[in-house]
Image (cartoon, rainbow, N blue to C red):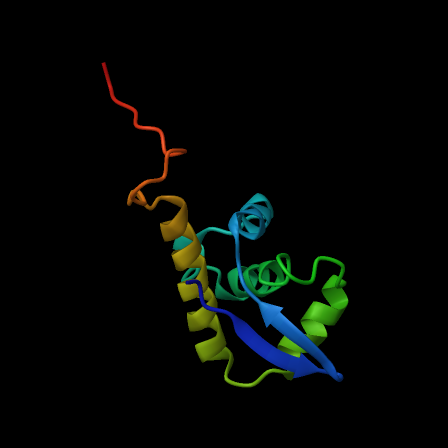
Length: 110
């Protein structure tokens, strides 16, 4: 099960998480997991914004920025966002098949 970040801001509850679409969104905007150490400010902003996509698509970028600025412990926040993105990547490439799942298709190189 993928992790989530939950908090309240201005009396509204938020649940941040990633799915395939939210990761595709931030990648299209320039996110690169390998560039986090080189461009941490840019990458953290993209990660934080992308975490809103799944559950809060209509929120404006300026409000996301205000929310980010209001949160404490940003180093740990960044670590959690990285871990959540990694979980999403891992789930996309998971090779375990569920038993009895007739929809799974096997493939082979010939």
